[in-house]
Image (cartoon, rainbow, N blue to C red; front, side):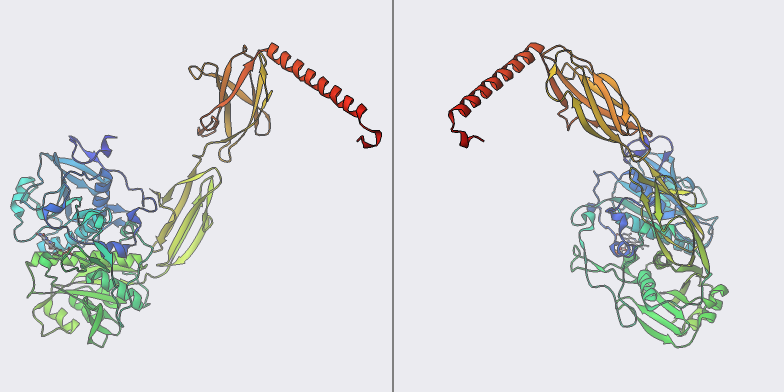
Length: 623
Ligand SMILES: Cc1cc2nc3c(=O)[nH]c(=O)nc-3n(C[C@H](O)[C@H](O)[C@H](O)COP(=O)(O)O)c2cc1C
């Protein structure tokens, strides 16, 4: 299909991307737990490391764009504080396209090669991230919202062994991008992201090797979950309907680590080897400070040590909620507050992007642990926020946002069904689970069938087993198909030995199909070494035994035959004796008569000889 062409070919009209159908087969890198995906996140700097001759398949482009800002069962892969203002343009060597998340497609925006706008690292594809100034009037928050999409691009690209980097240093000429792409007046370019396969030493991220996992006495060691990036992206949604259960230490450790921690992989290509952070940062400034507020106090998260240091030992959640202008947050089991340090920033915009990068990671890690997250601005009254967080004198710190995390409340129903040809585990039926429970559903095909797909709340997906986090009611149905052909076994050929000239040959085979059943069986034979084939229908003589008769042929004929059987779905099986065919020679009747006479004569002589021997032997030795 033209749509499946690799980028780089000329596409003159709208290019539609493949529809997301769930997780890819097992063994695929996309099966990695989301924690490992976060740990693999890194920027591929320097143009030299992008392979310009290796095209990025459309399917991978489609996944990256979906991850960035696509639609899911619950909304979108990224949260928003306005009305999803981020727009993504994709440029290849022939054109610029605009990503349309609603139907996961690209529309042709402008013909020509626009990958070089404002310079940067050459790559097969360049993504330009812009925001709609009508949907989000505040450029700081446009940057923050772009951070969510940019983090997703990093994570999905790294998962697919593609390299990327957020380019947006002081050098980036956004005006030339706006003009070069002819962006509408309400759109403004923010960042540029090359996308392409990487070259040594970064090929397939082999430069990243496991190292000690972050842990401390306050925050237990980072663990992997069973949740993939795709599943976590599917689960992203904002909710503050939490139960009053506090987070466990492990959950606290995981979400804080995701927010701004250090990878548990070491980059051996960097000199000296280093661990990347879970999010990128302009010029590696990492200006954000992360605070955790719960019922017992306010703490600062120290990423280097992966630990907490106490600021206040009293419950400040109410005042944080009020000061930030998010009263709904006052009973959140955990409030993560971000603030930036003005002594270590590139620009305020490149600092605000980190609000989004951090938020996205917390959402994804919350999804992996069955937690719910929400976020809000916290920059309208800096002094009140500083006071609430216990940072009154630190005026270099500028509170930016809050992210709430908690266990969802209530119970949700899961209705499981299965079509003909298999069943599920748990068995089909309706089950009630406490919110946040992670349920693994396995489709088990019956003999003769294979699992085809799930319909989860009306959306098709193929991963099996499927893990669902119960933060909503769900209906899931397993569909199976009979794609297994019948089985054919030769029972016999009559006559089994010599076939005489013009003698009929009856062939009997056993044909079974445990799926849709046998529809028809034929025998194909050739008497001219396969130049032409004659087809005979085989009829069911007794249960599963099919029979037909090959008419007699003149002597000297060499007959080869094979059996073909189809089931009721149309799956076809051929038994040609492993490529050797079933064969027999037709011999002349005379030859047969001669053989019989010879046999008779031999027998007569043998009997006569035996009798003579008996007559010569003494009586008592005869046996
Ligand atoms: C807002 C922003 C702007 C960035 N701009 C550039 C850039 O212009 N050029 C570049 O090579 N890297 C850029 N980066 C990537 C950072 O340099 C990179 O994240 C940082 O050095 C940490 O490295 P890592 O992402 O590999 O862990 C940017 C990152 C962010 C978040």
